[in-house]
Length: 264
Length: 269
Image (cartoon, chains in turn red, yellow):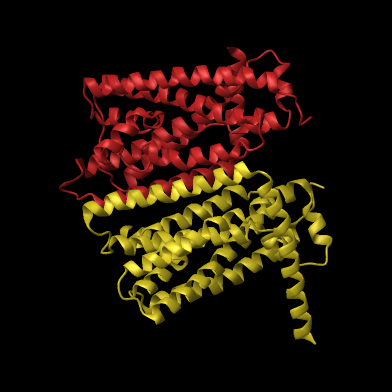
């Protein structure tokens, strides 16, 4: 456990080493948020609602979604495919550590840095633009939000690792990853709350793993849930984690048998 | 004699570009699955944003006074600039590795302009796959706008070319930054995020923000002003802003490139 904690700390330090790169990356994230925020500010009337969302609720959704995305989607696992292709994986296989746990620890370091910056940026935005941010006061709801966000983070980890494991059989791991990034903003509810979609499409989206990554945790924060919604959402999330874990481990083991360290 | 020399030089660069682009095309199509997935990803992203716009405008009936098809023109213009920029200046994305590995030294020793080589050093034909359907869609969208005059279309095309000049200048800035700091990847992505702000009319943003995107950052000059020309709502001020931006940015970017080259220390080789 201690060695993985050290890996997490190393990743934090590594990010601080490439400060310019990280700051420009954060600026990009901020630009995206500004664009989405002002679009919704313009569309949702100050004293009315848009498809069931008041302005405060919609703007909180946008800010909350940006925050959850920073926790859930920031990841170093995209490097795995390259390490397999180039044979760098060898260095890890001979060491007394689990490669997947190593990457989970790296992800935690990366997320810690992103969340720290995200909290500062979002707080500044809320203060500067006088955003009518909906502050959740119910402690149980806040606890549920953090538990769900953590589970979403675990689910994203397995999905992302699984995509990278294509590297065992192909040099084109970037292709599926590109598709993943192309759909994720839309399907996860990063662009807008999914429940403004027509009911049949929304029902299908709820069954996919992606809605658990952003839409579901933010809805919990907003307190817009009942027992059925919560139970169905949490069960869907846990089932997808279980499926992704089993598939990832099977693919990892199969991949290791196919691995020839050809990049060396 | 001077003109002949320039024509010869131009021919040399076009031949070089064709040669390198041909080789890169062969490399790209060696991985056919990659081509399919890349194209599919782009289509999904494109369609999902259209769905988003459709949901939005079906509820509000218009966005900042623009109808669905008018807003679509902003989005399509953004895509056009984005695809052309990626196609023509794809080598900028690889520039960091040339600097870090020291292979930029090889570019400097060759009898070609290092700037043209770094900018146009091989285009990505994968970016073109989506361009032709996009142009067809743009023509269809123009048909949905109602009455569009020849002058409006002409001004749109001219301002689009002006926008591409701005995009090229920004790519030169990124190259210059790459030489001085080796930071290229995030800078180029920052440029792309910036252009994404123009996917919707800038009127959506409140005044300090829209002022920044119009007069300080060239979002309006890249996408909004050309689209407004097509929609027949452009002002003379808009045209002046676009032209001033392209002239100033081109001049400054070339200056930045020359300054960066002087600082290049070939430290990695």
